[in-house]
Length: 275
DNA sequence: AGCGGAACCTGTCGGC
DNA sequence: TGCCGACAGGTTCCGC
Image 1 (cartoon, chains in turn blue, purple, brown):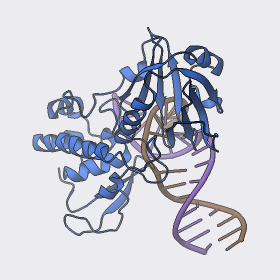
Image 2: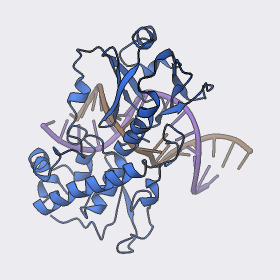
Image 3: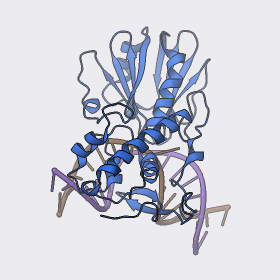
């Protein structure tokens, strides 16, 4: 489910519902969720406090507490946070429930159990956040930055777009969509990308991600916003999931190939591989 | 340094 | 109907 637009949608939707509310109870049903703490510690830190801020960094959700502690949450493949105004029974895949004094609840559900939650004290250095590259929608993400960062590398551009230390937040769906929009072959080595292409890559990244956020992300199978609504950006996919269907630009069939063990969708004609 | 492959889990879908 | 393999929005680790 979760690339930058989906995580951003979760954060925006949770924010007005939980900021400033007092946490009354924390229940965890799968200890694998907790990466660096035990349930008892989590309860001691959270209960009686409030969430003062919720932010996104890359694909991480940052819950900031009124006592200065921080939770970092990663949804991995199937994690999701749902908000309920009242009590709700835990479902089959519910791994954690946070209850508020006013009766509301957050349910974290995660079918595949890959998602993680970490607890950090106020002074902690959070290395996994510090390793992340710039936000693609920030002014730090420029053609010049990209060229400096990857212009010497010969790895295919598709793989580099998925590297969170280069750019934070792009995943498998949006990498294919961005490269199609930029008319760049997913196989092109970064060191063969010319200045005009770096410009297009940055423009297309912003365009696709901003549009996907407006659509509240993409729902393929299980992603929903915390209010239980589906995203809509899947209706705007140009290539992802469209193997053998006609390209919207040139009518040639869209192709799917495995790249670094992930599916890449592209139009061989519009994104011709040239050096 | 960098690459491919496996691992972590569970569910769904298509083919035989 | 049933079994089996492939595949799924992500990341990390291991060996070459």
